[in-house]
Image 1 (cartoon, rainbow, N blue to C red):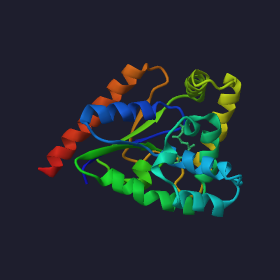
Image 2: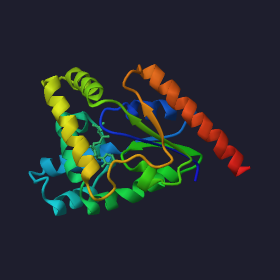
Image 3: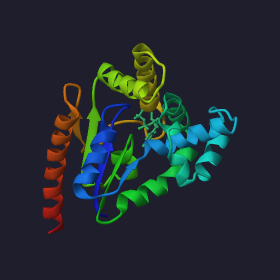
Length: 216
Ligand code: CDP
């Protein structure tokens, strides 16, 4: 295993931005694992299917192509909602697991952000962050992002989405959203992007020193 960095946390906590910046810092590839679930959800809907149909979601996960992770559709509000609906299915998670594990294990290192990276996908990752912020702060960030993408939506709608999604992601039986016992918590509520990245960088640098010492 290379130097795997797991960045977990709830919707719009800033984990994606932090993951991309850490990847650039170390020159490691970055995987936004949420895109996999978003693409599966949108594929089911695109085929006229029902998100309550576990078999359809599993088939969509099995036939997922890299090109389906690209483009604006997977970044929409609807895709985030669809993602959390298909993410409750164990067969869907199982199909997506090997790809994420292989990604995490690559040399010389990798960054993955998601919900269960530090707990299930890469429990031995030498660096683990759990990035949080209040629901209100996260809703404000997501609302600005979606409006910037041209969506027509109110802040109140997004706050309600965030509450629904937090509850669904935390309550699911398989791989619920939870901080790994050895993850370092980073609350970005009062932080700018630069401040949050700086804090994350210091946490990861400390983990890297320990990892290098342990490797000998
Ligand atoms: O940024 P945001 O949280 O809105 O979206 P995301 O990270 O793209 O994740 C979308 C949804 O996918 C989450 O609400 C989870 O239900 C699911 N997900 C998951 O179950 N496990 C992951 N490793 C990543 C995402």
